[in-house]
Image (cartoon, rainbow, N blue to C red; front, side):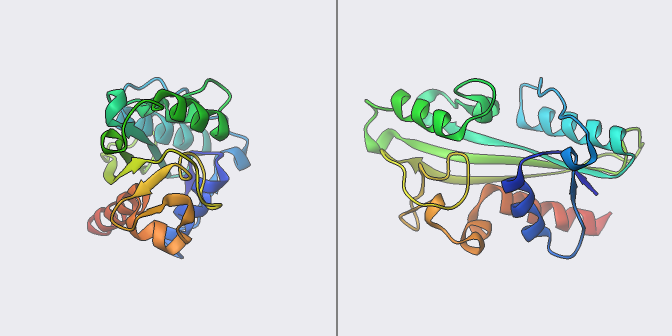
Amino acid sequence: MVLATGNKGKLAELQMLLGDRWSLVTQSSLGIEGAAETGKTFLENALLKARHASAASGLPAIADDSGLEVDALGGAPGVYSARYAGSPSDDAANNRKLLEALSDVPTEQRGARFVCVIVYVQSAASAVPPVIAEGRWEGRIAREAKGERGFGYDPLFVDEELGRHSAELTPDEKNARSHRGQAVRALCARLAEV
């Protein structure tokens, strides 16, 4: 199955969540360029990416689109999370821009969530409808980065129930709680019904 990404962090997380159930190969390892993410929602972008990867590879495809929604920023960066500070994507620059945007926002108003929509398509032209799942991970944005694990906004995102930054969690702890973990578990359950 082709995974519509070149992001090694995302591949590692998804392969860990899927276990031995499926073997994933990234589209970049097959020489496939990423699809233009022109959708206005996570679902639109996930569908674009999955169909593109499947059409180019001839394989079933999984794609997710995920990002961070910050309440004080009206849901931004949202679908632009990976390129919040511009293209090409740069995690450190995105984190700096987010901290600057929230510099005057009090702690109690820094609510945020990670959102993930994941899609499976059997083939780009298949009459079989895509299988879609979603996950949400509620938390808040810290005033400073903490932790050495993960990628993206993980150093700034605090799981308030645990009182720890996402980048401080072990992979197993993160996968048990994260938006991507929730979405993948829901997707696996739905694929088992198909």
